[in-house]
Structures are given as structure tokens and as C-alpha cells.
Length: 81
Image (tube, rainbow, N blue to C red; front, side, top):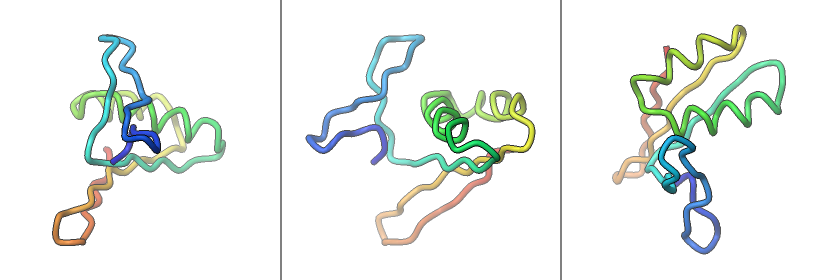
């Protein structure tokens, strides 16, 4: 879902591996700066789930949620703590 351009190709690169990243999830970030929210959402998207809380903790006043679109049409939202 996220990480793909209009042609179905991944456009986000994991800097630690050089591999393209495309997952069936979105990351939504809220906070004071739209620019920080945009960059932080991409960083959290690339990061492994066990590292997301650690990264987010460095940004006081920002919160994030993982959003999954389920096959039945519903969504599942999980707050990053």
C-alpha cells in the first residue's frame, strides 16, 4: 500500500540495506511541524516494528499510529508507544 508510486514500483529505500520498502500499512504522525511529521512517518515506515517506539521517543510532542487496511474493508489502527 504505502511506499509505491503510481506505477506500482517502490520508491522508499531502506538506507541500512539499500532495498526498496513496500508494506501493507501506513504510518500517520501528528505533531507541531508538518515537515517533521512527513519525514518521521517515512522513517518509522522503514524501521522495524521493534525500533519504532525508540525512534518516536526522540521526538517529544509527536505521536504515531500504524494503519492497516484489512481484506474485509475495515481498518486496524495501532498506536506506536
